[in-house]
Image (cartoon, rainbow, N blue to C red; front, side, top):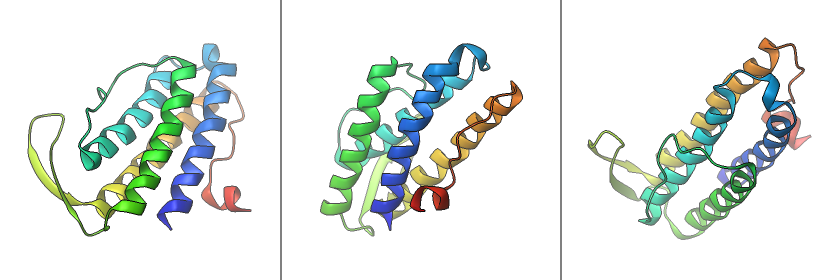
Length: 143
């Protein structure tokens, strides 16, 4: 199921990035940084699992970089799904310096849920300025 969920996130992020590029000048100032935050958080969690250097939580990227990061996040998540047992514990230090341990499966569920939460905020941003947002529901994607 995770492979389908992350394929959905990849495709939906791609469509949303196009809309942000097209209408970004009309949206609230928080919108583009919030999209970057979605990508950053996904990269950070992947980096924790793969023992790689993480991005900053609030790094801002160019549109082209966002496209590449979205693809990298998807590719890395597929690699995690192929290589890691979902029950494998991952010890990490969060952005505040606190130490935690969670399973790969719990981390991936969190990433999917986190992405959906913030994407909903972006959809609300589109509506707040009178723009019709794209449909981002999973069921719409799988139809």
